[in-house]
Image (cartoon, rainbow over all chains, first blue to last red):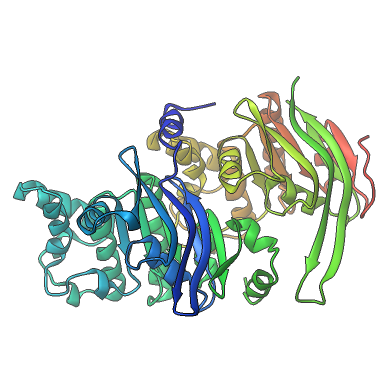
Length: 267
Length: 234
């Protein structure tokens, strides 16, 4: 029972969006992260869990082009070509990041321009991309505000007058409006109330499915990982100690550290 | 009828690293084959490892010994050693797991939960919604509840929402862990009907049913699972 959509997917998905080979980041003698290898395909959501200092954010920064690994390769699939993110020239790397990568920061202030209107925050990404038709940009922005459940009537308001949850949703609209194929998220629900978190998680689940996004999400919250991710990597001391299907890693953890981590959760 | 599942010499031992590295063997040497239209009942005392076996078949528990092969996209996938990506694809199209518990997602309505498996397979939203409504109606969930998130539903209602979600997109192989437990007679009969329909359509089922009556009406074969012992198909 193969639908037409599956055929399209199968055809497109022969190559991973992201191919991480033996990535390490050292700070002098100290290990940030070491020997990380994995591949990610469209539509897959990969979670990275581990305690503070386990290297999960360091790895994410290397993958997203925000930090330079000491060794290893980060290969991105871009329009049929495989490009090594850290071997490109600076302008090429920036262009690639603008074109195919999205980064959602834990703190919306790091991802938004607080002195520019909500609509401007989303619309300027379209202008960066070369869109010039004001009416079309504004329509597209309104549509994205609606998708992230912000009343389009607030298009001209400044993000600093938004609640934390709204700011985070606005940041997501700003990232997704350019239709990246690969999105990195660092604790996207970190600073939010539980009820606001639930709404954001639900929104992210739907957007991932609709846009067939590949996502790498760093979180310390195992219930967020269970709800949002297909695959899970567990990090400790800079190393990946276990990886596999999310439900398998959480329900039948193999490594001593993962067993400790999952046994500390109440539900 | 062709084979859909081949389980060969499967075993499972848990190792508890933080409790002195203790080893807990739960199953060993389980073998069976399931064909199209079969309904194999796992039978045995509680604690024998029936649920663990079902979870291993689904890839939720790691298999420490043997092979668990499913027919998938005109080939075979061995869950005991497949990549997560292949298991995810297997689960999307060929294998599903039906428990008596609904994993509630905050804020998502009952009807959206039920239609999600169809959307994931690329089915049109309108068709998916109509089919979800039909399933909820069949399972006697009052229409006023459809647009509400099931967190506040009774246990029985949540269980039926879960069954609706599971049977809306029947897969070639379905694993059932006591789907009728604690349902009233009317709803239990609906579930029996659903099981018989998917069998007739050629799906294979592997299940645990404590209710003797349900077992008699749905089973085509049974296998005895004895605690940490060789199991033989009857």
